[in-house]
Amino acid sequence: ATPMSIMVATGRGATHGVLVRDAEALETMARVDTLVFDKTGTLTEGKPQLTVVEPVEAIAADELLRLAASLEQGSEHPLAGAIVAAAGERGLRLGAVQEFRAEAGRGVTGVVEGHAVALGNAELLRAQGLEDEAFAGRAGALRERGATVMFVVVDGRVVGLLGVADPVRAGARETLERLRGQGLRLVMLTGDHRATAEAVARGLGIDEVEAGVSPAGKAEFIRKLQLEGRRVAMAGDGINDAPALAQAEVGIAMGSGTDVAIESAGITLLHGDLRGVARARTLGVETLANIR
Ligand code: ADP
Ligand code: MG
Image 1: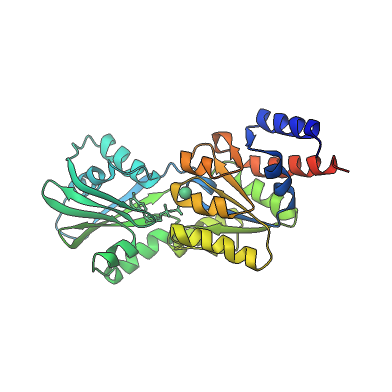
Image 2: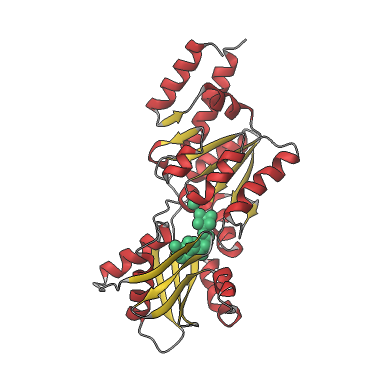
């Protein structure tokens, strides 16, 4: 593409909230045949709401939430935000945390007021030497409704479940429909549980879902597609998406996301406006057309 056509395309992108690193990102966008989307914070608003607080031991719901929220104060994950906000709304006084650790794609652990507390998915439970089988029925019902289920462990016992639901972004369904209409293969890639992911994917009309994927696994999945000959764009928002964004032919970061994701991407969508994915593609096609 000529320098002029690139300037025009990047300028027009910017007015629509599509920030482009360089001409290559835009041109590559026109050539991809597969679009992979992270779920939380990318297809969804990433502003999940706490919908369920369910003790499974003799612990008050407020105390369950208070311990969980205390631990999540140290996490930047959108799920943590939902839990801390809900505790705030209920006027709960959070405790101080020692030995805080965030385990990407799993959850968080730490010591709250002398109690070992852990909060996260079934994998985190297993890492703690615990099983989730006893709670499978209840957890399954929540996931069918598209909620993400987290287990709360206190001093080595599962004491309750938290359910968080995250609405899909406005216009997401329409954007995906448009991209599918252009012959693109669409995939949802998420660290979340399969049942939750599939419920959200159904609502968006995506039928290919890779769930329960670790942050390293996300980049591996992109590489696997590439080895099959696919040309892949990956859209994501989190620290956990950064390796996959870098691995893809072109990475698309949500401007609402973390700095690491933005640094790893060739394209950034301001305000996390997903329509920018389709716009970036159109701009890329137009830039390429100007080469000839
Ligand atoms: P996604 O790919 O959907 O953005 P992540 O890879 O960040 O999700 O996380 C995968 C799963 O790990 C979450 O669905 C959740 O169960 C668990 N998890 C991650 N971080 C946290 C946290 N701070 N608190 C509780 N659970 C967490
Ligand atoms: Mg995410």
